[in-house]
Length: 396
Image (tube, rainbow, N blue to C red; front, side, top):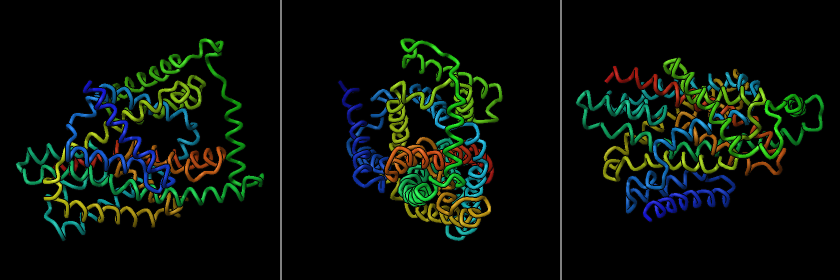
């Protein structure tokens, strides 16, 4: 009975976020509202392990992340993925802007150890936060042990609505461009649509089986095989390239070769289940702090987050034009460092769906925005933040 109660509570929190997002046309992101619900719950009556009680444990998440990333590869083609080197550069240079600005200005306000402990989780995910927490314990700096995880929790709460706002502005710009250029055969929009049609016509499924054999479990097995191959290759490379990145790349390749169909896990009817489970696990990290802990370091956290975002903004503002992006898109790519996957996917798809007035517009927005956000998030959270944390551990 307890596990069913836990599952229902977790899903109700997801539902509240979805409804608020729908009511505000994604102006308030669903993940922001759901995160607030979890924070209030953890700080009042919810047990700290409610997400694992709801069946979303470590094993489920390990499987879910790999399957979902392979699936995301079926939403784009190889050309789109290769074209995102600019997004990678923008995201990484935005992180550099955060590092430089926070180190220079932050050390004028706070002591050296406070700034060094806060920067890695500010520019990345939970792994960076845990690395810094363990480093602080090893160095005997116990007064700052709570800072990295608290920073990880707080910066995403600020990053969600800010990124949503920027993506909405970019989405409206792209919708206007789509409306003005879709009938012009020489426009970038028409060329993009034409290229998509050509690539879709070229796709030939490897398994041309009768319909009775094209079942959901067949799709899941194929996705699982690609995920298994991706993790095996990552193991052979000793983690030189993050396994999550390889899952995405192999998903794109399998899709291009016709091994996986478009939008694979959606057709298998399991995408939402896996995504909600992964989100629940992300929100479970909010249980790691208490009001008392946050209250003692809230000033340091807020000031350093603001400094970090200003550093990102300056870098994005200066680099947007040289890399052929709008300032809004460049800044949004940099902000993926504040949350990464799956939040970058959820935020992007919510905005694209709410801004577009029909399926064609939504497909155009998704094709333009989603690859940039996904690749930017991987470059910062999965790769750069771990490297930064490894370096900053030596500076404590």
